[in-house]
View: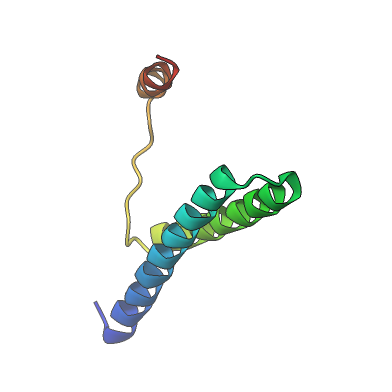
Length: 85
């Protein structure tokens, strides 16, 4: 892999880690917010963070740096049932 690609990959990996950390912080803050308008603002910020994370992941996938296997319908049902239990 060329040096410039390695640098790009490191930058996107770092950005993704930062977005994951920010999402975790916004999620915790929203869960603990007592004031409805503050909670709503934090939830809006959380959605923005998740959208950014998704854009980074999509770009990394396009470049072949990560592989996201498709889930079968059976696997999806199994995971859903695990959360509903």
